[in-house]
Length: 104
Image: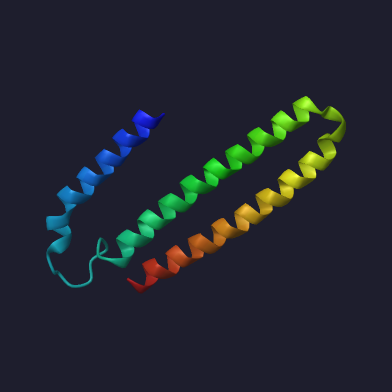
């Protein structure tokens, strides 16, 4: 897992370094300019983080329910509350990214 993340990070860095000359040319308002690129990366990070968070919530809830089936309803209620809070934070971050993209 660590090796995969390191490889992915190196690939992203290489792509950003290779894209810099194309992004440096001043051609006025361009879709791949400043805020639009930041909004795209921000949206991607938000969605990856939310997916990872929902997966971890589900994993922990299912493990807890398997270990103590008698308190499964309480665990499920807590899981739904935490998932709703995570979803709200995700929507807020996506709205910020959309506002950044529109201002570009």
